Image (cartoon, rainbow, N blue to C red):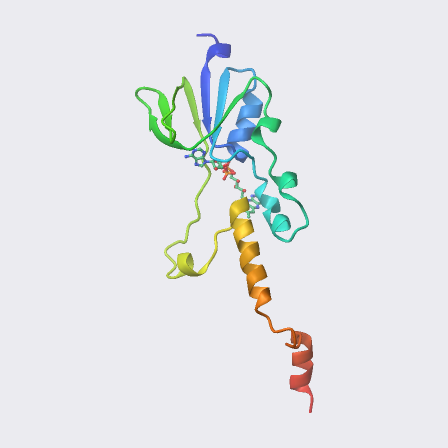
Length: 160
Ligand SMILES: Cc1cc2nc3c(=O)[nH]c(=O)nc-3n(C[C@H](O)[C@H](O)[C@H](O)COP(=O)(O)OP(=O)(O)OC[C@H]3O[C@@H](n4cnc5c(N)ncnc54)[C@H](O)[C@@H]3O)c2cc1C
């Protein structure tokens, strides 16, 4: 089989998967599979949370970043069969591959800390940031308007 005919399937459209697809462009029949339709520049998720940037600044559509020859599938891979060289998607589609690149990133690790999962919020995706923003807004809505600012409180507590 010629290199250009190799079926290369990449699971995960994050830093690893997306940049591998860009580097391999033209080196085979490339298919990138990602759960989301967008790539996410995670180092700027904080700026998205604080409203300094918009979603489109840090989460461009994967299709816009890939060249025309690379096929993009939005979907969740649920099974890999290394013997049959196939991957299955949640919608029951199946894809055959000659080369498989596995780059699904990581999940939040609570490291066995008791209560961490229950009392903290994950911060890895746009949805996580949106959820956190809603929680912060709700919390601010409960602040009493007449409550003194912390600086004033400190000053008044040291006053004679
Ligand atoms: C808030 C935050 C800030 C960060 N800041 C920095 C920084 O400043 N500098 C730095 O070096 N690193 C930073 N990191 C770490 C950096 O983002 C990660 O190291 C990097 O994203 C890892 O790349 P990846 O391709 O392995 O995984 P990811 O970027 O997580 O991409 C994995 C992709 O695979 C997809 N996927 C997963 N499972 C499946 C499946 N079954 N089927 C289909 N698709 C699937 C996911 O949806 C995701 O799109 C930060 C991380 C976070 C969360």
